[in-house]
Length: 412
Image 1 (tube, rainbow, N blue to C red):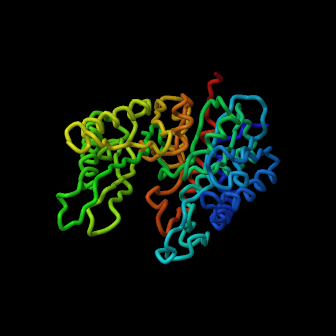
Image 2: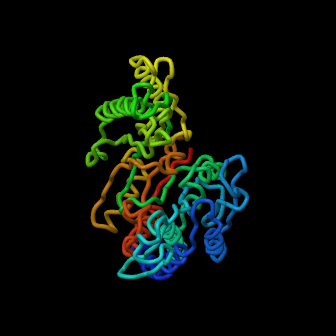
Image 3: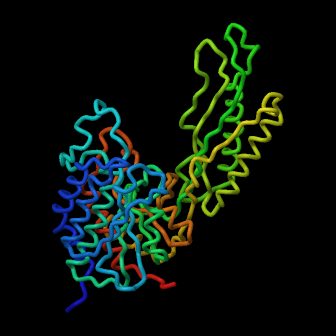
């Protein structure tokens, strides 16, 4: 029997496209918000079972700190089975962020409507579109009769939008993969490099006083602003020192931002407490502990220049263990396979860097050759009227199928 050609593989994707898009729409209708992923995992498990691919259900451990841990399961499926060959991971998260104010949506958030060449609804971009593309890329290879020289572990994980506990557990099912593809939305671009991040909370205390005599108190909000300015300056210097060609289109590859800030409890009182929470970026390969110490050093310097803070120093709490940055060389076989597949399917190759946190950090930071690739505009994620173009999902499935067909893995 002749070896299947690239045209055979892409033709199988086209033949499966309608089924793929219908399946994607059905998964969007399952409102699998973080904590309630079990609303959709059964549908994925049935899909694997219908194709005879072995699948393991992996409940979250209670020690994860996640709610409803016993009801929330990762699915680890093996294509075409677990043969003991080198393993390539396809990783996608099934949890989605809440829909928010439904009045801000043009249609119900979980409609799964297919209209105007788009699949509409929360999770269509982030990241059920990528999951559908990955699953049907494998289905196309199966139907075309392509014999991959490696096993594929499909990890459909929970809790990515909260703590990453799902992928942290899933990696133990395939502890030493030869490569990992994470199916986050990249607009169809190839991502071989991602910066990381640390989440933090800073608290400052003061002394309350009536606002008619604010000098009788100590304004904790004013002290917090000084802390924020010092951290922003640290981030500015760090951003100026790190340059990478795949981040040339953004002002900084390691962003700093404060997401929430609160101070005081009454408008007619000087605030005696202020707090802010945010993120600061990590360079690829930078140990999170080094950045923690640098932030703590800056806080100490601010305190040393202020009479109040010297005796009442700001405190910092690290709200997450951190997502390390990582990079895969663009001449690695994983990336070259992606590039050649993208050229064939899209007419050109597009590579970019990623500044958002993702589960790819759990692979790339361990030295696993890693790439992020998926359909959909990431700016539509976490927003009203989230949707993904059907043509983009089909094209992504073709790129993924050809990538896997062309990939040469290194065992060990």
